Amino acid sequence: MEQRLTIVGLGVSDLKTSNDFYEKMMGWKKLPSSNESISFFQLNGILLSLYSREKLAEDANVSPIGSGFRAVSLAYNTRSASEVDDIIQELENKGVRVVKRPQEVFWGGYSSYIADPDGHLWEIAYNPFLPLDEEGNVVPS
Image (tube, rainbow, N blue to C red; front, side, top):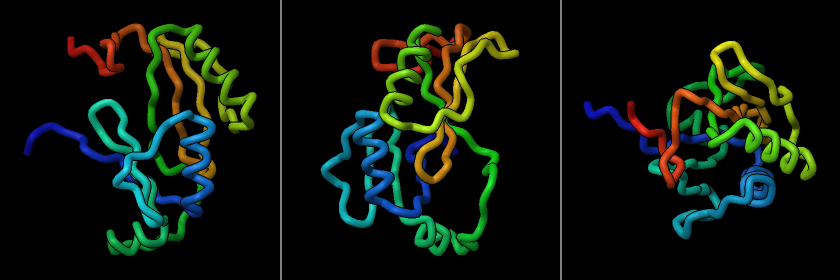
């Protein structure tokens, strides 16, 4: 099996609310392949999909019931610590819930956490050990 991640799929409680969050708060654009049941956002080399939590659980043949920490976070890496501050300030001004204020962290970087409408955690971080190329991809070392 090749080492690859193609799509990150998030189960959401309300697709319209989630679309509004990612389009209006994050400033991202849906792909034309999106429809009334599923949304796709092109990230660097992968897609983010939003789909009904219940239907996603049904597709995987698991229970949709569950809350609290999901033991997963998504990360948006920046090119500087000040960029973390700027992004968090912009998102907070739009009403996005900041879970953890920007701060220096134990591993040597600088990070903050926000939550989308379903509580999916996004780390907004500057990691000096993971440089980014022009497209925002991690430069392998």
